[in-house]
Length: 200
Image 1 (cartoon, rainbow, N blue to C red):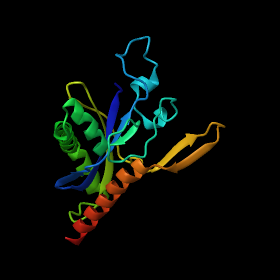
Image 2: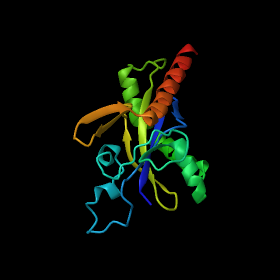
Image 3: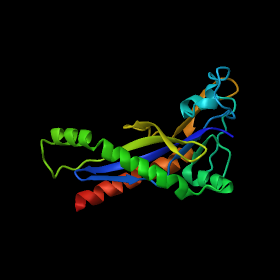
């Protein structure tokens, strides 16, 4: 009953020709208040309408979880966990990820002239120059599974910290197993792909 979005990680490995890789794992970030259609009366109910982790972690409704693969009710989940929840509603991973892949593909091709210009400027026309970039796509789906691109982060957070306050108002920071599980895979896969490409 809560609005959520997906943080999808994409590795751009080449521009000429364009080459991108979609990570199998990512984040599902949930609001902490049950959703009702936006009205002037509830428009400022941020915990109902905004999925940002940085906002919802301050909500009394925030549910912290360390579960990385099984279904749970946490406010932040892995895609692996999300698929197990959605399958009960008859929604399968390909029903979502095929549309995500199509959206990412369209983005890469739509921005290709801009990326090519900066690539050629940075490397002074050298066609052998190699570089890579991890970017984060924030995507939301409607009830008909149509995807909507919220934003693209060219420098997505790879932090694995979870910040919280105790009952006395003391601030703490600890490692989040969910973030470690996802972001380690993102970085390891990026490095392996980059090294393998440079060895070719």
